[in-house]
Image 1: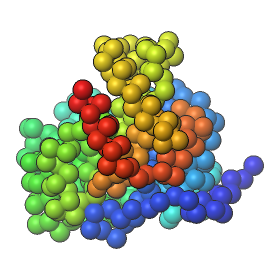
Image 2: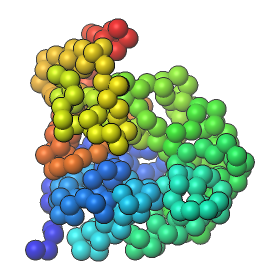
Image 3: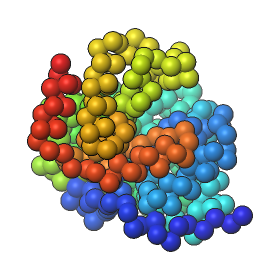
Image 4: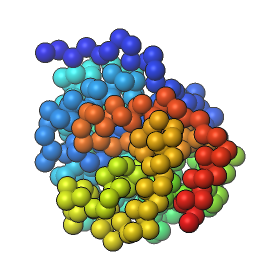
Length: 329
């Protein structure tokens, strides 16, 4: 059956300007880090992508190594672009990244111009695209001059392979340096992608100020703290959770009694707001200067629940004070 997008897809989604640019991003963006790889059920991923777009999520975030196996998330997304999304390409923001290990040898990792440019060429082939909307340096490289990494980002824009550039997981000081170099090159930094949630507030110690002062947008990844800020861990660690999986980024030892107690207290505040804990956690991330929160999903219903967070984004001073008290306790 031919996919036809929901004609009301732009009715309820909220769109925010990304820094000082002309680009608007949806308040929620969909990441393909997990559950869209070659080992995952294709039709489930397809259903999630379709539903996300029908709900007004126009930004799809990928990276060269997303899968598993690495590269397979981009290949899967490329298939969906061809079969379902071809008429809607210009309604979408598609991003990719390079910075983690992608292939063997000295040229398949980190931040050299050789690696970044080659990786983007591969990503474009996998997705069958002429360009991505945003291309990121996925992490800072301590052994490559910042000037070289930023020159690579500038180059791919001049080559027409990317419209905008971003960085991910750079410190406040590194971000300031990246902004300066890119401004000198004439390709301003559009966006920073940091890990940010109620349980990981590092961007509040300087980075967010740097972004605001320089007109750079932000897209928060892991806004649900790898699933900690969901109802899964209200009573400990269930067998089917990420924390129970030895190969997961969320480790069992992170789900301490103290963390579970905080999650339970936060859930009580969410109930008073007529929200799930997931919805409140997303609203909290979006309460300040963050442009968009990057959600992940394993089923359509999770995307639908996430989008409902936008129905109540406002917090009272009392609520924010109580949340801070719980988090600092």
